[in-house]
Length: 250
Image 1 (spheres, rainbow, N blue to C red):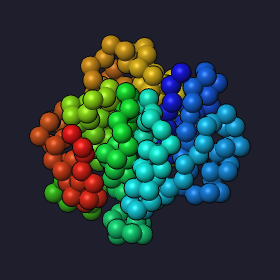
Image 2 (image 1 turned 135 degrees about the horizontal axis):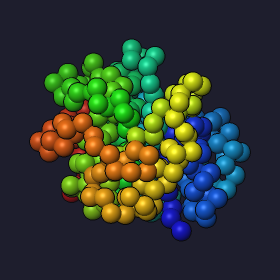
Image 3 (image 1 turned 90 degrees about the vertical axis):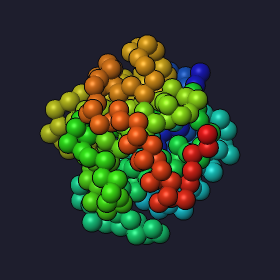
Image 4 (image 1 turned 180 degrees about the vertical axis):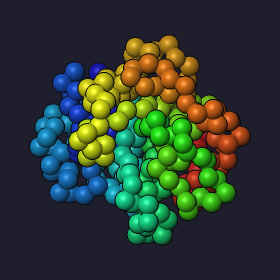
């Protein structure tokens, strides 16, 4: 039995993955951005161990969330599932003034991964849209698009695979009918859940794939080539450390 923390697990793929893992006998810690959503998540997944609360668009709350997660006990896996899409590009974080999309999609998963003791499996959620992304290290935190942030998630998976004592990966959930994806999304949400579970537990293709792999439809995929640039991976983490004031313990 594994103990797994899933960010952004009040609805969508995060919640469905939590339900599947609970049904299979695993301990799951949910995450919500506020108390109201936490109560709804606990009601939707009553078998979850607990719900941790923190708004990932707020750097101080993200750091507090990491502290609460650490205090709750060791994890076998952390799935960095939370994310925002378009419509958030011009909104800013209350405490940093950085663009909210960048803070939630790129900075928060880095901060959590840096502050929560590394589990045996670490999963970052990307997207096929990362193929259109660029690192944007010279303008960060400004001008980071959704596609850029999803490229960052692949790069973070590869960075932690190289530097952390963990099996790190990134997953592409596909274009699925969630609040983020929209009702007309053509891909299977059940397939997305299977991919999340596989990466989290290190089963299936994740059992034999090299560390830092990118998965789609429960199979090893090929991410954008720039994601494999180790110099850029290191530069991304250095920039995120500078912007957040949080360094990865090596």
